[in-house]
Image (cartoon, rainbow, N blue to C red; front, top):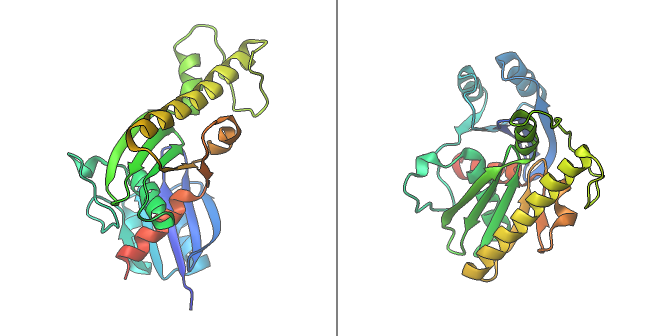
Amino acid sequence: MPSITLCFDFGNTRLKCAVFDGRELLDVIVLENDETSTIQAILEKYKPVKTLLSSVIKHNPEINSLLDSSSRFHLLDHHSKLPITSPVGKPETIGADRLGLVVAAVDLFPRMNNLIVGLGSAITYNFVNKYHEFLGGGISPGMEMRFKSLHTFTALLPLVEKDWNFPLVGYDTRTNILSGVILGMAKEIDGTIDAYAERYGNFNVLLTGGDAPYFVYHLKNKIFADPNLIYKGLYAISEFNNV
């Protein structure tokens, strides 16, 4: 009989909760804050058997106790049991969000090389080989960070909002920035994929994160796009630890 699992993902930009019934993702909820009353309301609504918290921020510590008292709870950190190894110098420095992405790739495409590109507050490149070794990758500024830096560190450039509709050749300041940032990021991603291909040969490319839809049609490389990839990875980690 499937049971409810809640996977909380506290990122730099948003706090979210993914609701699973068995392996089926039912819903993704955006939380207004990390107050215990907010979490309690979700617990009362869904009555989960298992919960997991992945956090890259300094969240309200009372949440851990609340989840632990209401379910079989696991806090994702470098002590978690994972279906991957991390032969890096300091595994404790690996972000919980990146672990979720890598585990999702291994769960979906086991015994294969995978490059996972996460498009959120930052772009993260995460490479896991066919032996399920997470080798690391790279981090660069995300879309909003680039828009904000152009505005903050210049005297006259405006703060531009994300937009699907822009030309290759911008015709005013706004469209110049859109073209430069979004197409520039697309070329960065394609170039990084090509560099990995030169070293590792064949591998899957998985694209995910809130900004992923802006890039799917601008990339020349073949990709597997899934905006919910991290939640599927968090669910797999919950199953691995909440037995």
